[in-house]
Length: 95
Image (cartoon, rainbow, N blue to C red; front, side, top):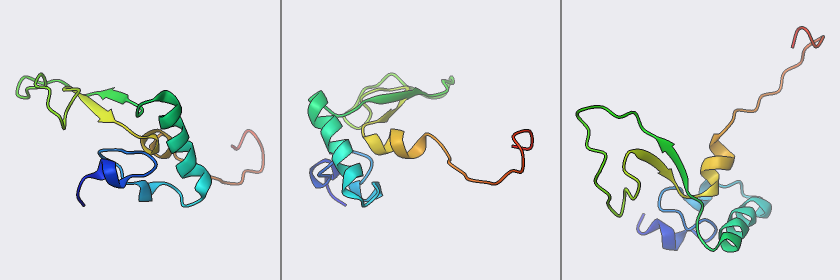
């Protein structure tokens, strides 16, 4: 797949490909606009469970935040934070 950052026009993400963004132009342009207005990519960090057998202190280019899950693009936030479902209920109590 090569260097993802240079191939991702909208997000310039190291991890998520732009094809995962909905094809409507609005969604890619939102990700690009946010990145351009900030002057940098988004940086979302989620802590990992620390155990005695795993070294989570070494910082590398691929792992700039050891001990955390690093997400550098809007598809991580917009596309993975919820599950939307629609169902029909006869009353609010039933819902």
